[in-house]
Image (cartoon, rainbow, N blue to C red; front, side):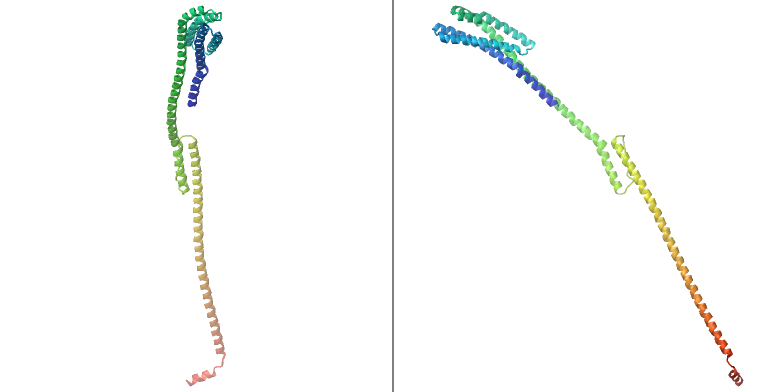
Length: 316
């Protein structure tokens, strides 16, 4: 933006030179040169008339009149361009010298030559040297002032550009300082907290729920970390609930396993008791059967005849 302003300022200065000062200088130079050349054509006319070359003299006089008219037109063109106060004073002085030259020599001399009065022309021509010298000095003074205006505009433009370069340099330096300060502030307020948050998230991802977010201030980053902290707390509570439920399930499973072991032991004991009872009953049944058999045999044996036994007893 500053560079564009500097370029526009320089363009404005050069535009003033191009549209006002330089065209006025060209018109002024052309007006002065045409008057000086008209003087030469008037002398040429006087010389040609003295030599009897009337046709060539007529052409020279016509050319002189054209140059005088052209000089007047260029002078009027110069007056149309804007002028500073100092230039107005110098141009007024030149206008006075020009008017004196025109009324004292050029107009009367031209009229005398058109009337064929060469003597009057020669008298006025002898006095015109001082008039032309004064006019030429005033013209050079004004031309010098216009050239100085061009140089001043160039210097002013360069000075403006140099000022803009200094301002741009200072602005760039300030921008770099501000950028550095902004980087430091952003690093302190954003980058560093985000790196810490990334470390906390990594620890949480590894299962370490003891990691906590460090919140400072009330800006958006602090609000983000506060929301992340609430999320971490919720996750920690959820894990705690799940862990408590898992512990309760473990305890229940342990109790069930202990009950199963106790039930199995009791079942084995009852089975052993049943086996023992069954064994005892089987032995009792066998003993009862043997007893019954024995009794039956005794009964049979008792019912048998006993003579032989008595005989044997008697024999003994």
